Amino acid sequence: MSPRDRAELALLGALWGGSFLFMRMGAAAFGPFALVFVRVLGASLMLLPLLWWRGELPALRRHWRAIAVVGLINSALPFLLFTTASLALTTALMSVFNATVPIWGALVAWVWLGDRLGGTRLLGLAIGIGGVVALAWGKADVKAGALGISPALGIAACIAAAVLYGLAANYARRFLTGVPPLALAAGSQLAAAVALLVPAGLNWPQVAPGTTAWLSAAALSLLCTGLAYVLYFRLIANAGAANATAVTFLVPGFALIWGWLFLGEVPTAGMLAGCAVILLGTALATGLLRPPRRQAA
Image (cartoon, rainbow, N blue to C red; front, side, top):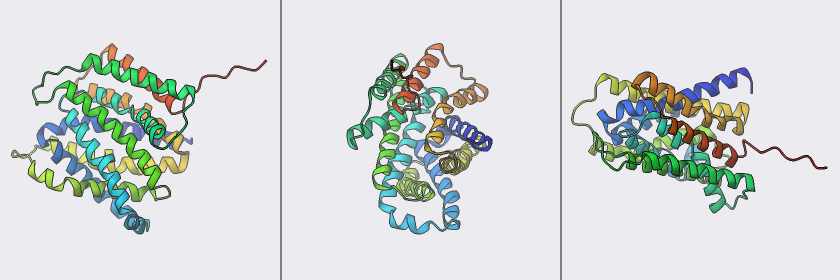
């Protein structure tokens, strides 16, 4: 990658790591439905003009049904699940569970699309899932916190969201190959906004959110979703998909830093160990890390 690609990769990791911080800062005031609606609506309003400027609106019209499905399973539902989890879990812990997305994606591809997994990738799946179980086991308190969500429910929501992301990646691969990425990004955010319009209206906060909550929602929408999508697809185009997916390993680190700086969240040694195990499994399951081959005699 060029120095510019590396800088954009680091910025993308910082933005996606920051998304967990802004969810934590805005979820209590807005509630999950309203906050996610503001997030996807703002992102769609940012991305659709770019799509028009690039002349790719016809692709959105041709594939709107499949794009709408991606909007549901890759934006609306997982955003809701992570925002719900933010009422009980720290930014770093949520980001660690989010880092398992490639593991679930590989598992879905194996079961649904018949992808072959060699011994190393199967080992990575086992290590990654084992790390998830170990980390969840130590944090899954069933007692609800002050905001009505228990850590156990928050962990279940994070894992469900990560599975949905993995499913969405394979659905897009199966039905949307060749569709311009910006059409997929803009259309999926618009579809998510349409799907959440009524639920958000029914669950709109009775007390107007404060300035901090609105700034968090704006940052979540425009920076962590709209701008982040633009950066991500630029990286895929300029540096390749394999290099772009390396952002998976940066997000937990940035989320930990943001949570520590702005919310005073200090990760435990057990959480850091669980994170290391999950990232190792992810690297093996995705083929980014391969054991050295023995030299033939």
